[in-house]
Image (tube, rainbow, N blue to C red; front, side, top):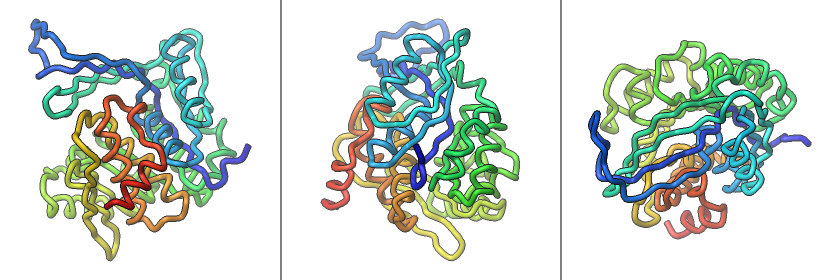
Length: 309
């Protein structure tokens, strides 16, 4: 099965265990929570499900364990229509994430243990060369080992595939990854880590975008939460406002929703700024629902929001 015209995503699956409370507990303190959910997560996995539900042809490359969380992953991909190039490992547990969700405003804090996906290496990328080289879009992040991400971006770039790099979680990265990124898409926190200054205003975001371009990225897109996203490339810088789709319930996975929508729109040939708008609409709907992958909207919902706006 060819993925030409589709989106290939390298990343991790983690079972999201999400706890809702007023605040995080202090050391040695126990707090009563107001809610709990268990569902599929992991940045790359969320992005693949978001893309598929938004109408994209998504292929996901990863590893999971042969355990109940691994079965959860495969069921989620089947339900969403994601093509799963996922290795099941006998002797390593599937990844999992602890997610705190503030019950008042939906803000979150996350700890991820990648489990089996932490063993992704360049062999996983090589095993999927045909799909990567025939895709429209290749996208990856930094929850799996960096060397695998670099190898995937390099393979895709050499084949003329459009590359989307989400440098998350925030960390220092080698300069060569910038040059391999047609689109680099950090949030404010990740952008600040990359450029060494805070990214709290639109001017600071533009200054950060300049630095990312100077380091070799083709285009920088900095997601700014409820302010939208800054599209920043040579000769063009535009703040795309966020959409409102209702009361914000849970911002976990908002960036993944954006990226899945953005990649889908790019793969369909939309101009990049329009693809950013599509991503913003995807995220706007996702944050009105609890959870990550289960919150990702269907294409009809995204189109309806864009029409109404």
